[in-house]
Length: 78
Image (cartoon, rainbow, N blue to C red; front, side, top):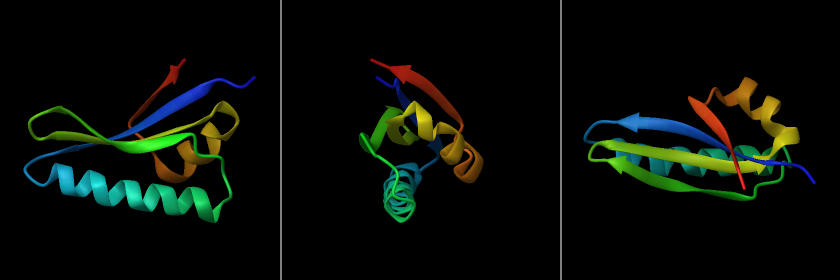
């Protein structure tokens, strides 16, 4: 079984929440367009003025996402 990887894009500032929400829409569209498996996606907040859009994907698709969409960070989730 493949590991699950959570890939994150960070947004800062007073419009960070709306930007992260909008970015997640485009991330989902990218996944659909390229017929990649999406395990989870969403937006979360780390602090005031810091929001994150994220995807959780199978490890086999990390290179495709990394090269095309340039996330800031990623980690393995259980």
